[in-house]
Length: 463
Image (cartoon, rainbow, N blue to C red; front, side):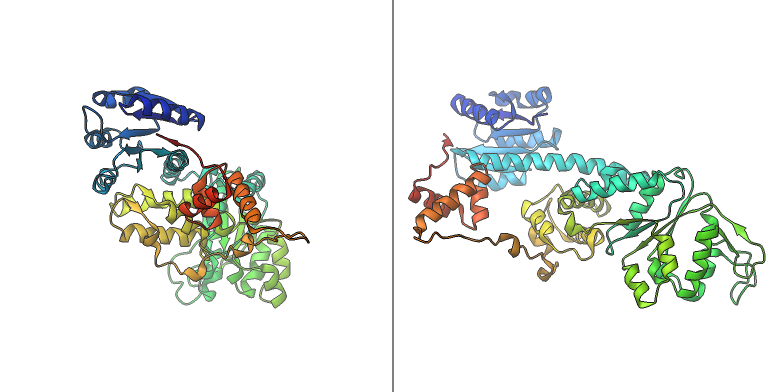
């Protein structure tokens, strides 16, 4: 479905030109040429974006903006004017305008601003969906993101989830969401109506690990003076248990865990009665268990028993396409928590987040968004709000930007090389000069100067 734009302008020539260009750019277009009927037109056409002229013959565009913001808060409004007045532009942005364009409107600039609007709207839809998911215990595919690595993992997860008792080992860096994936496996399995019990093996004192996992009888050891305690395996009977950070378990408890996996039976600490259980076991680790086996800190037989099926959760660096949606979902969460009115994340901030190293993965991203929302003023998160992120953790993209220039034996003129480079870049950006300038590391004015110098045709403007 094409995004719909409402043009509000009483200049017939501008309206005709704009409509023609917008249709060519792939948008549906409606028109309102009466400042007194703007609200009626927005209600009637339900546009995704409004292009609003500030100086209408009989009405003030800023006053119309105020009214639209009250009744149609979620509709992005782009202000347009023939007068380059900084004060008016600032006032429009304060009143909630999404952006501000000067006449004559340059086509490539208009296209970029509209793309930004559409991207904002799509993210909002996805975030609203994520928010609904976050408010329920039920997880869906949309919760995890839409990047190719995540979709590939989810396809595997859903196939393995169909089994009732297949043991699965989840591997991945700290903070990648292994527990959330484990919960999704449980909810997608035949055991979904039974309990899901996660236990972090790294947080259990070594001398209490056996009691935590298998329970104990009254008086079994010093401190066990109360009634019989049920362990996590017994509590999870009929459902699923997640042994998170399983590589932290000591060798002595690994032996007992192996028996439970093989026979589905165990004794409570100090108990004389063997207890049978029906539990699906999932395990997670941020270590390489194969390496731990080689070091002698993890039993080889237990590793093979756990590694019936293996899922490697990708790091956030491998799924950068999910960062905008995840960021917006966290912004919405913390805006409500801290009573903030954050409406959007600036494009430069999104770019910074996508280029950052994220050693702590999704958990670190969530923490960064919490701090940014808590400390900011205003309604837009900008690049400056992430000054606390260490620049040394940014991903080095220099290797991806290198290329080999082949020079013919009889030489080549530098202008020929420059012209070819600019033309190929414009081809990649589909004629978008702003994007091309960014790719080439030039200012837009410098690029246009070079284009004129080399005889490359400049894109026409809407007058």
